[in-house]
Length: 334
Image (tube, rainbow, N blue to C red; front, side):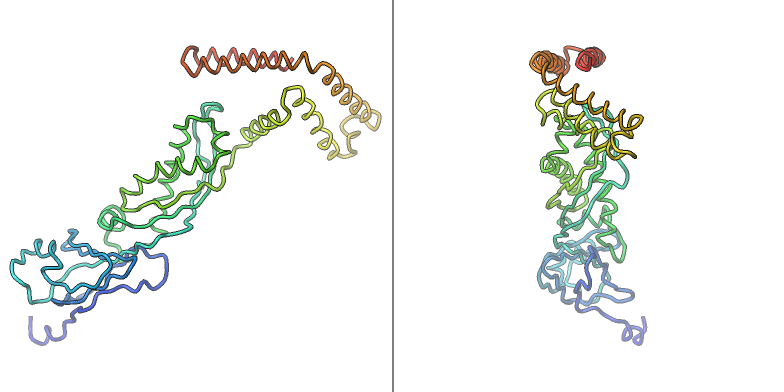
């Protein structure tokens, strides 16, 4: 190299990152044709880490602090370059800064319904949404596994990968649950903990620590929502007879929404009155026969519970359980 070229060559004597703007996780210091001066100052601020790369290989990692770059502060790089003596000339190395700040309020969701297997309803499709927070804790892993040699790596870049991990963990959490889906959907805190526990080791593989994970809503398919509503209604009414009364009562405002009101369901005002009388008679008859029917219903419910216990213990097959269940339900609806 000529003296003029050496003089024109620029040297870096201060390395730092001021993090202009939010949303950047990794930033490569723009070296271009510059070299790092021996004894240069490296400033790593709070909530930052710095990583030195030598010829594509990860070398030294620095946490928050002010460093003077010498063979003492760069032990791995010194070993890689075989510096057995103090070096007094500039050197080249790629330097990456990483933000380790807590990334709060990151949103996740299932863009498409996810099909899961539920022990009670079989295959169902669900959608879920929520928020989570995380921070970068293992800079070499993040660089090696995801961010690589890109000049800028953002929060949005990382979350494209994290969303896929969340959906996978959610499917596994539902599939391995010991409780029915409808019960889990009603307890979002337990669901959040289950998915968070499944995600933590997966995030760690990429150098990311999951700080919190929250399920804010779970959307049920229409058929499953109807079944859930029916179960809630039975629980509110207390027994099947009251549930039948509840259904009849619910049909009155629905009929009123049709053209002509309740009469519009039949063939005019007379037909509407007949329908109303039929409903009233059915409700009165149900109230009169309630004690005997309630006893029979309770027997059927007990039989269903016994069958379910046998199925859980593996004493009956799925087909036998389904047939017996269908026979009991048919008797309940007679």
